[in-house]
Image (cartoon, rainbow, N blue to C red; front, side, top):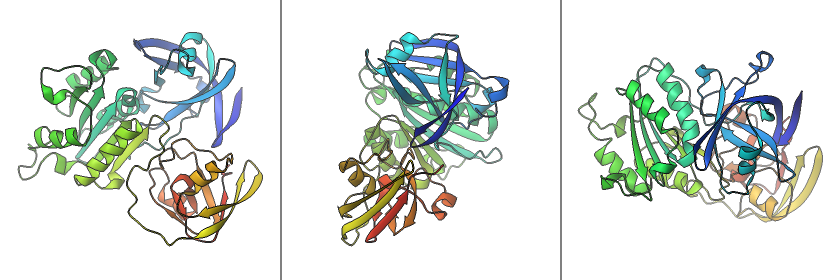
Length: 374
């Protein structure tokens, strides 16, 4: 039995049985699902993607997204989940669902992915905080398995060593692939023998990492390891992503090579607005959601389209408001907009008129959007 559920777009869910459940720390646990033979094609995924779980919490239906920690070659769906509060939805998920129980699981989705390049020499750096390690663990396992020439550096921040999840898995990877993987742990609330590893991962810590860890490159005496970085992966809370993405950019990494995944609602822009636009007042706005047409007027184009529609209490889909999750993807049917940042849409989608409402500024007097993509 399967269900189509609207969460920004129509998403296909299937009933899957929990095959394994492990308590990792006092507030994190993992779930692994049994994939029936007839659904294996539906649950193929890329490293860095996530699934959504639909379950009951305090009598209400909840849909939450969780990243895979498994890599595609492992041919299983394993999730790392954090319990944020004793009476929250994830706490109910932990208490009420056991091995053998069935739960609705969406087909995998998400754009926090990388193109595999097994024949190239690459350097990839990952920054994770807390539960943000989950998609990066999937990425690193996959890269180590498929790309024999790629070297990896992971900088993993937690409050304390007690909060550090997947340490055994990470340390095993470092032991078996030590020539290609280096891992560095940072703690913000636990003193470390070396003060370098005490504190949050931020722009100051990044500068120290570049100068003291990613400095001399054994493969090229005329450059540093940081100079050779091809891609950066960042996953954690919004403020951490914003800080590190901008720091990486200011240290020379192009924005297109800085990839991030957000683990909470975040309403700020990741990068500062670098353009100014002519003021347009009284913008006519038409849009379609779930087959229903809406009309309104935006007072000016000084704010992004999604934010203005939310202020007016329209039921537009969103999650991050930062151009990362893709929940507000829609088609521009009439008018002109400026897409400020885009960590989600492909070039082909942009060419077909797809935009992200949370990152779009109106540049014409009338705008017509269609959120019904499927």
